[in-house]
Length: 304
Image (spheres, rainbow, N blue to C red):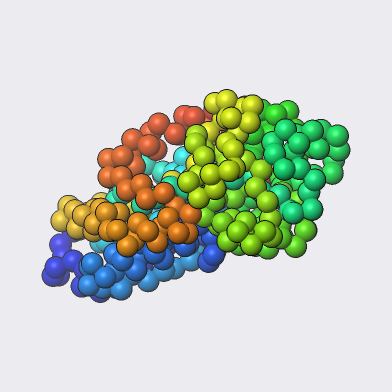
């Protein structure tokens, strides 16, 4: 596709398929601001939430492949949705041009401060003693949040009702308010509330403890080896970008990923600076797609 002049010649729209306030939104705004500074054009955030990221992802998939519409989203879009939604309005591989991975954050099992459990062992015993009493919130049906919860509850032989929300922020509000006893969310979204003592952490679902919450154990070290899931956030564009535009975007994201101030800001809001190339995005999607399909089938996870 021919360009009228050097890219970018106008503001870029970065679609975030979640509401304001969640992990993807926080990181998207941070990355978008720095990319805009480096590119010499503003990066405008467009929150398009709903349907487990498919509304925002579909909008980007159908946009002109000129580099002016980008998507920042989690594995929910690229590896979870294909496992739980038989008819997607986009193809997780063919519809998008990977730009790179911007960062990663652990997922974490959280409890309202009045729930009488402080660790995984107490939590499992509590739920087994009252199997119909507990429910948990996620930041959307068929998202990594639900996946991590169902992965653990299946392994622990727990039956807990799932309450999907339209994003992290409303789920967190209800958790703090006592409307729901449990949620699975990202460390980045939970960190401010944990620091203020408004909620409590049970366990992280990643393969290692979060550097920001070193006292919170992983599921694996709490008696469930092999259970690992984190949230990685990738930037993509509609498939068919001009090579020069793709190169410029890739280079800019890499520069953002190596910028000390941006890295420090990422860590402060609960992210591991984990820049990886467009090739790494494609390889990660290829690796995770069959794994997510297997988990969904075993745990009977659907997007409904």
